[in-house]
Amino acid sequence: MNNFLLEKIALPLGDLILKSNFIKSLNFWRGFDSLSELELINYQEKQLKNQLLYAQKHIPKYKGIKIDLNKKVNEIIKSFPILTKDDLRSNPKSLQINNNQNVSRIYSSGSTGVSTWVSMDKIDLMSIQSLSIHLWELCGYKIGNPILQTGISPKRSRLKKMKDLFFGVHYVSAFTLNIDDLKKICSRLSRNNKYTLVGYPSSLNIIAEYIIENNINLKLKTVIGLGDKLFNHYKKNIEKAFGCKIHETYGSSEGFQIGFQADLDYMYLYTPQVYLELLDDKNNPVKEGEIGNVVVTRLDNKHMPLIRYKLGDLAIMLPKEKYPINRKFNFPLIEKVIGRNTDVVILPDNRKLIVHSFTGIFEYIPEIKQFKIIQKNRKSMTVQFIPDDNFTKEVLKNSKLKLQKIINNNNFKIFFEEVSVIEGKKSGKPQIIESYIT
Image 1 (spheres, rainbow, N blue to C red):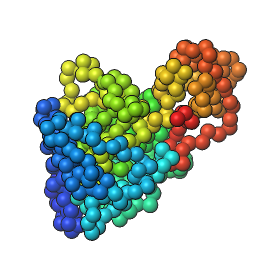
Image 2 (cartoon, rainbow, N blue to C red):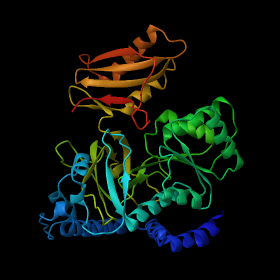
Image 3 (tube, helix red, strand yellow):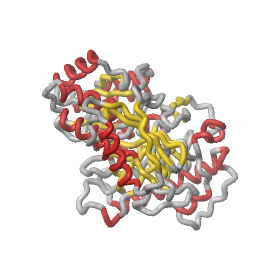
Image 4 (cartoon, one colour):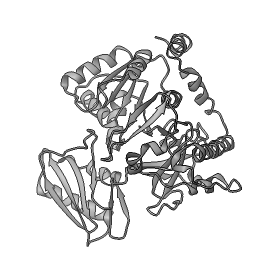
């Protein structure tokens, strides 16, 4: 189905049948693409203030909060408590508006070890779904082009089946890809170079490795990564295999579409939908360029507004003086999304080593097939590893020297443990660092 038929006929017809507003919502989000930096700031501040006033008036958890309208909105929000996943699990009804509307429960993947759910009414749900499609557009997707998507929800809901039908989505499981699956995927992608490939970077890398190993000639227009980390070696493999750039996105299943890549390696922060705070462990704001805990407030929902929700991720905002002279959009820039707050190694002097500190070393050590860092105290860490061809004890010696160079602390102990299997998370996503430091 081409762009015109889908957008002008099929989707409006679907809205009419389902009594929804997808096209209206999609065009609403498209309207922010050309706004100036000041216009984006003004819109976000207005929406944030309205959301805080709405929550204080209608949501049980926030009814006792006093709001001083003489303060700036970035000060007003500090009157609201930090919302954790445990809060969401223990008393979700206190976060919802009291009405009898039909709502849907949206469950998180539980990749932090804590599974949660949020409820959305039809308007809130349509808003997040249309924004998801629009961010794909900003990454290069064209409505009407077919999509191959990898994910962890093989049992598609009725609504997702409708989406798959309208948008020409072929959905495959991300983490059970065998040789037959890979052959079928490559066969499908080779039929039409207009395919957009969407999914977990770890699963896209499996497909890319198969293509490279078998010298398969495939060229796509766009690849979009979502749901887990895009490591450098994934990126190299994917861009080599498909002959195009992979665009990374950042969001959460609780209803946040936080960032996307377009023309830059940095990620644009999508301020019309989310207000982002980066806070230290005492909930104080960190400076631009410093690592902080990701705390977000959604600006476009009313049934269950999540105010100052702590995702469990870490990120860094790009300092304004480092902004490229020319950028396609005027949204703020995220320098790096590091991942979960358990995806760091904490040294005795409180320095933090992120996942990329280690992947930047081990991607150049082919004798180690796979590795995982485990930290149980601040004095040491253990490197689990699976040896590959040509592995010798000398490889471990050289690896340890490289690690000690970035750690720069002779008292910090590094242990190695050879294993036959390295388990991922329950969701199937890979886990490079497993930290037990609290």
